[in-house]
Amino acid sequence: MTNLKAPTPVGPYSMFRYLGNDSSWIMAGSIPIDPLSGKLNNDTVEDEVSQVFDNIEAVLADNDKTLEDIRKFTVFLMDLSYTPLVNAEIEKRFKGEYPARSTIQVAGLPMGSRVEIECLG
Image (cartoon, rainbow, N blue to C red; front, side, top):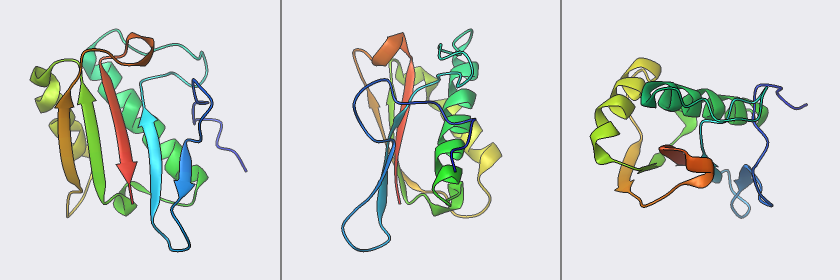
């Protein structure tokens, strides 16, 4: 069953895949696409960060997972000054132990997004 809140990929790739024969998995990078319009929710960087986490939760739900199943994030930002916004969203959505994380400043992201996050579980 597909969750209507999950965006469709913007290219030929899977949003979620199990790795090998165990329960480990990887989720493709999520950008702030509004799943209803297919356009970026990018009025503010705060909007982008919130939409990315909404999208992550929707893809995880489609695969019987939750945020608590994430072991590691890789966060791609157009500007590292956005890091406190990501931190605030993580603190708002996670209870207990936080996933490991790498944060990388990049020169560009798909569709002009300022934020992209991939997950590993």
